[in-house]
Length: 224
Ligand SMILES: [Ca+2]
Ligand SMILES: [Ca+2]
Picture 1 (cartoon, helix red, strand yellow):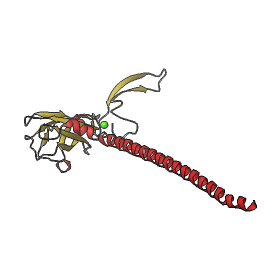
Picture 2: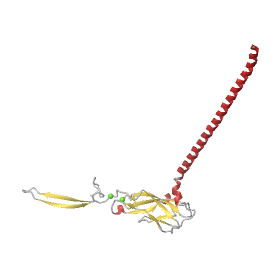
Picture 3: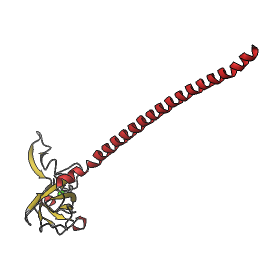
Picture 4: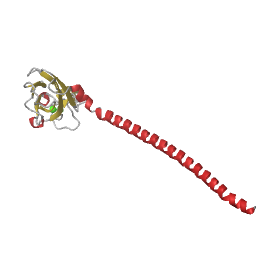
């Protein structure tokens, strides 16, 4: 059966249809026949990778040709519609000369030894396609970090993201300490200036009193 709405081989792949034939005699006679029906598949599902993305850490001294990782995908369809194959999209790879993927198993292998010239972070885009008509496909990103003596240790790369927050914390602490120092310095300066002003004020009062006393002496004498 083909082209009937509501039929989905991925949900129900077989039906048993019971057909009854009845004559118009008296009494009516009938017989039944059960006809098994298989639903043929159409390619209505793309392959799906087991993960939305893959992160791989490549150890040092890796032997060229060794398996780095295996990506895997599945397809809900049947037969050719579910027969899948993998390939690397060279134009989307950091360095397409470094890696290869097995057409049928999804095993990612190194093609050659690493050198200092190779980037420590590599990215691959792997495509999986079924063999149906029309072809359905999907892609997944594989991020590869080279963990060898030629490059910065991978641990440092992982911690790099956390470094800015530590630096920000230190800068904040320095700013707080600077502000606190400026505040203390301002208070001390204010206190010293206040003490000086008070002393000057007392001296002025004493001089004023002395002058008043001196001016009052002759006047007292004149009165006499
Ligand atoms: Ca299907
Ligand atoms: Ca399919």
